[in-house]
Amino acid sequence: MSATQADISTILLDKVADWVTQSALAGDSLEVIVRGFCERIAAAGLPIARVNLSFSMLHPLYDALGFTWKRSSGMTVEGYRHNPGEKPERFLLSPYFYLLSNNLEHLRRRIDLDGPSEFPVLDELKLEGMTDYLAFLQSFGGQSTQGMMGSWATDSTEGFSDAMIAKLLRLQNHLAVAAKMAVLGKLADNMLTTYLGGNAGKRVLNGQIRRGDGETIRAALVMGDMRQSTMLAEKEGRQAYIDTLNHFFDAIAAPFNRGGGEILSFMGDGFLAVYPCGRHKDPSKVACQSALSAVSKAQARVAELNTMRQQDGLSAIRYGIGLHVGNVMFGNVGLKDRLTFSAFGSAVNEVQRLQGLTKKYDREVVASQAFATYCGGDWTTLGEEKLRGVGQKVTVLLPKQADQTAQLDDAYDEITYDGLSEAEQVMLLHRDAKTAPPKRPLLEKFMQ
Image 1 (cartoon, rainbow, N blue to C red):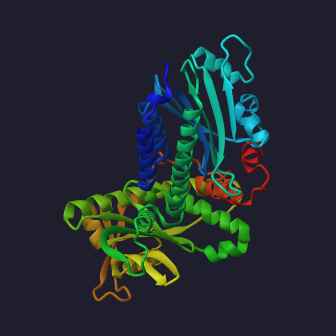
Image 2: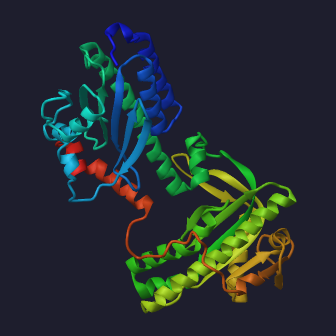
Image 3: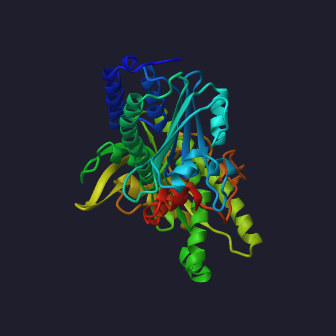
């Protein structure tokens, strides 16, 4: 394939730059931006046959994300895990390592079909019919350890002209800005989801940020709480108790954070989860049944955790769960400069007091009559109680399946005492990015 400077439309390349900007502003993913960019520069007349782009990014599992686009076959995506101390030979022999080691921004090599190759990747490009190769390194600014590095390759007989290179470098800047926005947008989404929950995180990203913003939703409610936590804290010590609390939440709360449910908040050694639903009978029934199904899974998970604790010579963890259904006010409350998303209202107070009744009846799970009616199934009436702040007495029931041995759910991950969660890995990557030494930060990011 051959192309001359006249074949390359400056107007169309400007359109590519405009598209990249608009795609970034629209919040498109990194994959969408990269694929669209590659397809558009090729359509605009640039004789690009192969593009390779890698982004150092804050992701719970990968330190870098790589994209390879070929005119003949489209794009492939690969995540690169970074293992401390490991220096892959392919990376050490790559043009990228040469750029990083010598603190360079660009490297161009004409590909000689007959002569020796300076880098192994050039031998591969020979087999693909490439004639010219331009590698680059672009930081996302300042002392950031995040950045973009990549390469452009052409199979044009004349290779890259100076005009082509100038156009590529200009577009490369637009791509870097869009990529940085996509990476930081994903980081913000990860952090908000981790600390606020999926629903509340989306609300914040969508602009529901003023004090008093909120709405009323109907939901099945789940309130869980650890028993004898003060005794455990004194017995186990600070760090051991924090570990116990995290293991307890891993076991009991996780089932309520999927299948339509969401953990709204953790309160000391307890949590509140909701299953939003419509205001009619059928949606309420589905929400209550989903919550009760998650109860069975939570009980099985805590039983497994207690088996492990007993094997380690630790005491079993006891808990109580209250179930209810009703309207919940959900929104921004707090100080003008310190807000939180919270759920409140009479239904929240009622489920909290129902959960407290598990102590009186010495049961792990109790529910209100409203919850049991929507849920259906077999229930045992425990009694009627006057809940503080509630005008009428509330019938308290026990789900019969709560006395049965539940099976571990298929999605149950074995509870371990080692290793970091995805959220913890995200935060550590962010910390390391902020505290990395200033000298050649991208090289140190890849090779530390």
